[in-house]
Structure formats: C-alpha cells, structure tokens
Length: 84
Figure 1 (tube, rainbow, N blue to C red):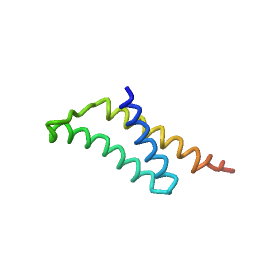
Figure 2: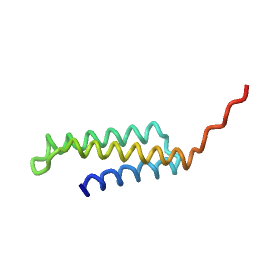
Figure 3: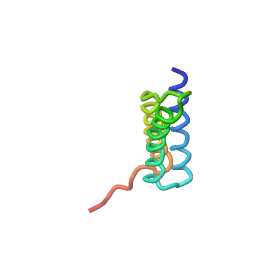
C-alpha cells in the first residue's frame, strides 16, 4: 500500500511542480501519462526481474490528476468571468 502512495506522490509532485514552472500542461501531463503506462509495460515485457503492475499505473494516473488539479487551482487561478 505504501508503494501506491509513493507512486501517487511522485507523479503528483512532478505534475504540480511542472505546472509551477509553467511547462505546457498538454505536454507535461501527456508525458506523465505516457511514462506511467510505458514504464509498467517495459517492466512487464523487458525486465524479467520486475513485474508490471496495473495498479501502479492507476496510482500514477491518480497522482497526475491530483497534482494537475492542485497545480491548476494554485497557479492558474479561477478563469476570469466573461462579460457580454
């Protein structure tokens, strides 16, 4: 269980700090999602001493979502309301 929280924390931290540094959200979040999936597939297919765990991918994706949500709230602020 601690392993899953570590995955969430690490991916969430990278998402949050990347947004703080004003890295393009589309590029940053896309890269994090791709890394979550590809790294587990690589572990499953290419590294006999490691296991690919779909729950690690899920924890990574939850971390990305939480880090992005918090980053958007803190660094991007509420969108200005449109006046007509």
